[in-house]
Length: 369
Image (tube, helix red, strand yellow):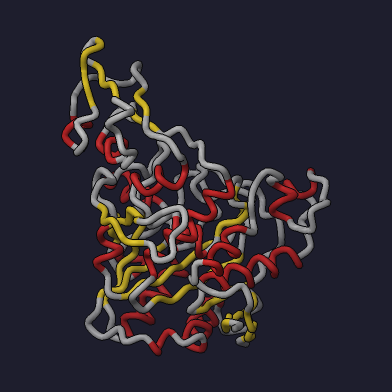
């Protein structure tokens, strides 16, 4: 069956802001049907890598926060630490990055919580119903502690998944550092001997006794004992332990859909995508290239699969901005994101999400003025 997806464009008449339209949109889409009273509501957002200017402004988050508070809920903004080395790979610098980009209680009306903790090791193994690639998902604990889950996503391009919307924000974003490793690679972590200082902190987080320190006191991993949980990656403060990033784009997209299902199953959930400043790459980059299509609008739904499909269709129907990277590409795929990243996969998130019962790729688009 087709799921309902609600949409409002970016046009604003004199005296009414886009934020007012956004609040009206999420109310029409049914956010008030959820019982928020005295319940914790996790709002999953991407705080943006410092240097990137395409991430969602905090103003959008404040609209959602205020609406949830008006419904009696206790909201907080949340994200998990990144697997790659950057400004958001551990809890304290992640909070610094959020503050630098304007996400703090005076601007959004709620607290920021890094869901997988200071080192990225505070997670829960959540069963994946109907999972083909993952039987369990490593999800940030604070996200699973919430009674209600809401996603607020910036819709944009991505070099591996083609596009990043609700599924990418939820599936990849809610994975702890161990979860991100499980999604990105099919092997096990390795040690960069030149970066290791032999502090042995990694061994404290290994339940398999896979570490030894015989070669000049530096860490080595016994691949026969290692189970690939990735907790050592978060434990290492010198970024000496890393993943091999060897998962195929098809497998990555399927794992993202399965992680999303683990997050939303069994509790109320609601999803919002903002399709503006559609940059060709993820907001994890510390830069943002020019937008590839004109701003389209804001979409909301209870179904994250239908939501992403509606946004993908709208984005592909939009004219390319010829002064962007799309102007440098041969546009032969009838898909802007495949034209930008020819080896990416912009279909499997949707199709696999349907297959495992996460949502529907069919939707009824309802316009809210």
